[in-house]
Image 1 (cartoon, rainbow over the protein chains, first blue to last red):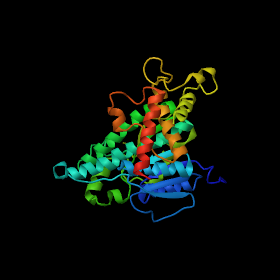
Image 2: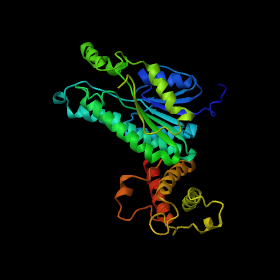
Image 3: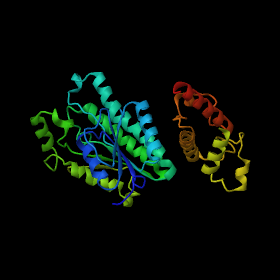
Image 4: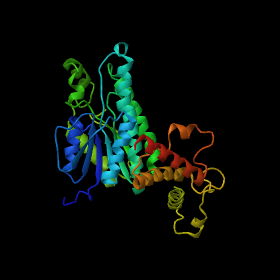
Length: 237
Length: 98
């Protein structure tokens, strides 16, 4: 694609330092997008079409400062992928309140804040795409993932309501619910626990990041203009 | 600031090129009886004003903060009250971030 930087559609991908976020950032930078990424610490990689911001999605001031900078540098935002998320595996009776609060702050409040500011940048063009991240842990009611699953259940609710609220400006809001993928998010999960989890899936294997990109491609496609408020799970859930 | 708000209201209400747009002034209601924008239009207007303030002054202000929500008299009543509120917010923002 022979686009100048200013012609490129701009996409924000949160949590892009590593894992699924880094894969998606490369994926879209290679496909003609100007990618803006963020994480709480510096990115260890670079790309000519990638711009990294230091931001904590669970901190309102940090998020609004990042969006001010996106507005100043690019003057537009065409899509946002709310990939940033944290998880913990613990029995409810062994989960400190501070841990639960941290998970809700990043996963739920973070998604809310980024969606709100992204939509404000999309309103002038009356077009935009937002993709949020849920998880199969919510519909499967996985033991040991109460706070994580609940934080993502809230993300699903936000997704459906925001799809309606943002529809007057042709901004679509959808969510993907991946199966476990081999990233840092699940690295602390004991192998026997992961085996039991995978056994509950119709497709009994870990997910792949390329499968996530396949779904985000679908939600971002111009032909998906009328697809909004949908939650798409991987793995047959 | 009043000029910025008037222009934003005209654009959002689709009155920029119409004679009726000339009648938009500080007393024009944005809420209740005689309002020139519907509820979606008011949301668009608030976002539009935030974007214009950012572009023209470089200041990032959030019009829908806790103070706006808690005021007994909404700052979004009229074009004039909105202009006063935005002026106040941008002045405070300058004092915090010189």
